Picture 1 (tube, rainbow, N blue to C red):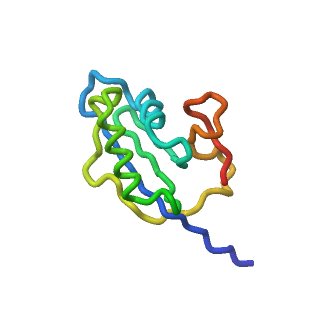
Picture 2: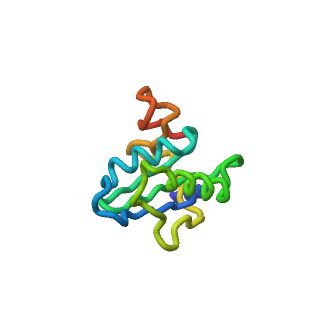
Picture 3: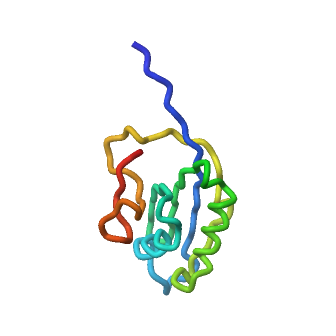
Length: 123
């Protein structure tokens, strides 16, 4: 029996880094960053204390240029002072579609009952 080839989706990896040790660490900044991005975006986060990687799924209405503008505008907000894009960030590429994965789905605010950050069901 052969396995089906993995379905791929277009994504943009956004990597931000903390440049000022006196500002909030990644967990707090992730909540703030997601709050400044469109609520319908599918964002799969990975955080370390001084680094955030968001893998944002591209769609017909969310292209790489739209992501770049929104992320840059969000990082200009005073709530994200001390955080900036890492060199080589906003890397567009194809990634395996993990919509059938068994672990929790990417973060979005749209389907959260909290009104801020929550887990959404995979589409």
